[in-house]
Length: 518
Image (cartoon, rainbow, N blue to C red):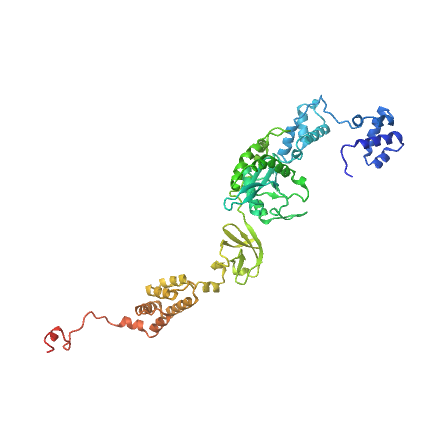
């Protein structure tokens, strides 16, 4: 049975009837009617003073009867009234502020006109009931922000497709000041959810200690008594040094401020903007900024100030500072086993990891520009993101030494070697790759044989042999090997060069032919 602080008029009449018409004890009546024995005792004392019979009370008006037995305390006019609004503000500003300490300060001013501590506490609780529902809870400055999506969306026409789409409205409310943030995004997906939080922290120019979201998929992967927070969302909270405490399932009171914030944003922003025509989400957010300023400066009805003034006075001074850079969105790919070729597949592209991690489980963290590979919570590789489907991105240092040597067999590698020998060697290497890819297997094998010849016969003889092959226009490994084996390169150097023919009597000159051959 749910107990209430106020006893119903029917129950009051039954208590009075049993006291006046039976000889049952206070405990017996209390047990039968499921009320406290002290309540029955108090009613019996009251009836003794009034000395009326049951018929009198039975015919009595309900309001009069209620006034006889449930008199509410009224503030003593001779006592000094505290400034309850100021006391509530002090209670919210400091987490360890106590009501007892504030009562002592109140008494120190003038003990003669001060309430006793029990009266002070009673009238403070009564004051809390008189303010807005969302203000009744004690929300400490800079402690919590409550976030949720509004049920009402704002329509816009997509400029690219001409389709009518609906923008989702994200709402964040600081607990102490009720300072409100709103942001429109294309969806409630993780990337938009994370971006909305980045914008919210920038709007507050600081970060609260705790974020209280609903149990949407972008925030909570698995709800329950021990909820599992979305990994990217958890990573963002670490970046901003705050804690995520999701509201309990089917416990709307855990995020009552978010519900009220959604209602207020819907009334003062969403409903107004739904009557306008927009062509992008950016246009909607520009319109939200102007209306949000008005909303946060609207005065409260039952307490002094407005959301903006309370934010400046209470929340802003104690918010944590923003980090140097906003959080960069990153999605995660679940762990997968590294293949024998020391590559893992991430969004249909293959990225290398050090070969020592073959057959181990590796996760991938993907940003807009990079792919990071994580093993046992340690980053083991980082690559520039590639959109080439079924392509490979490999860092040479990730290969075993034998694979590195094999991978070096390409045009660039052999040209570096040839340049250290001479121009003829470069011509031979270029000739092997002519019309072939830079990693052509046949060309690499030919260049590997050229390197072996240079090592066997020496670089000087090898360069001369290459020059001979260039001269006879036979730029092949077979020609260079034949020139070196037959020592043609050495004979080429030994042959004397003759600038003119020597004098000899057998030689016929022009004069011989002019005389008719005589």
